[in-house]
Image (cartoon, rainbow, N blue to C red; front, top):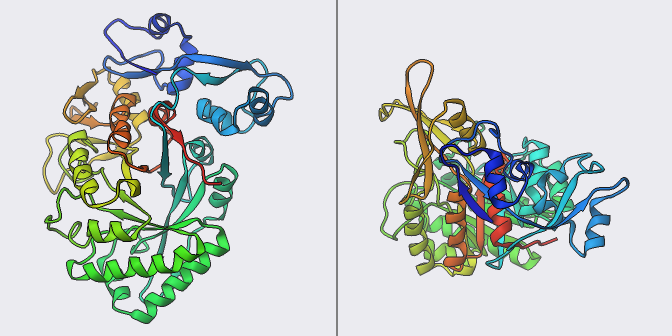
Length: 428
């Protein structure tokens, strides 16, 4: 894949002609929200088909895959739109293979979903995943689970060869992390034992393949209690062939202080868990100052520490799938950024006819615009260029793979890069 950055005077036709592809190919692969109004600085993934199939009446994904010695998963990774209902229209073209695929080997990809995910987005995303954690089960100090409606997502994941992961988090009904919920459970041995029993029973009943422990803002004095809980979970799950995954705050050293960091003991937790997700995102966040969500230099700082104390083959690198729009000037405690998808960020740049800039240190795109009320905004987002830089870190650091937070919006720039660089492991 070639990543092309739009220049002044470019049109979709001129770019397509330059690379010997059709404009339709660029629109389909990039799901371009602005094909008639390209933005200077916009990154476009250009993939060259090697083998294509013209769909005939009666064709199915299975029959096409068999005819070419491919898998249905491969076809869907090359043609995500084909995962949608009634997508195979006679006369349309299906790409069997592109140039230079899977250059960096195998990797595991974890994609987080809420139960209310759009089912079309889900169908298009699953071919790129190994596991799908479903957000999230809550609990109380007595060991009762707060359930979610997850059966439909588990069934869809299983059909796509993706293992579902049960998520557990100390959260309020308003979906906010709560320090006291975790503390009360740690302080109640009988409740903790009952919670683990309920977790195992739920996982076995529903066909979950593992548990994702996402405990954020744990009291520093609960550090050892948290480690003991993870060990108890691992002791219960491992004999059943079930995974223990733990999400960890983005630390750059073991001496970092603060409620988000202190109870997340990288060496101790990394020694117990089967997999850990290093949450290498949220430097730019809703109430924080404008900046890239996952600056590459910051990500490297976390990974450098992570691989020094946790086996590399256990580490998943966090991958963001969202953007932020801040009104300016930023005022701490007052300014609140709007969350939007990366595709919406491109559409907004086209709407206001601005130039997209690229921060070389952060390896992230951004732009400014002035809204109809005269308020200046800055938007930081991700595109195919920034995703290419981020995902290459998985191979560079020898990590097990990546964890996408979250898959609620389909991000073609991300999935094109995954498809180009890695063969996605499947567990089912």
